[in-house]
Length: 165
Image 1 (tube, rainbow, N blue to C red):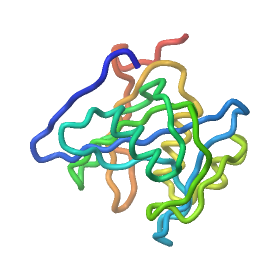
Image 2: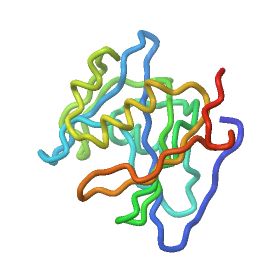
Image 3: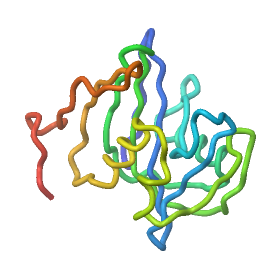
Image 4: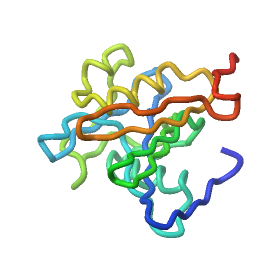
């Protein structure tokens, strides 16, 4: 990405996650040590004074052993209950091999066609679906967790409508 995004919100936490592909078109997934989370996309909370993309690169490397390049912003997700903003990106593998960590019990590349059936949690499937269907216009999505429900979904920078590539 040419422009780094630096944001600080008082009272909001920031995190980033990505659908990462390799040259074969496979997608990177990790299985959390928390049995309630199952398989998910890499990412996590940003550290103070860290850019969004730098935080995502760091989190992905820590969780999976894979260094990535962040390529596209897919969506800005707002969790109303947790006062959390999640930046959803596409990314590409630069180097590294899948490696487990304290944040992952298993890390692997899977065929893109099996991604949605691999992910168990509805909100993680929705994030993956957004990435798979991305056509160039980022979205702003407001959601709640309990019960999981999307409250608002609109495209950014195009009058709320998707622009075609």
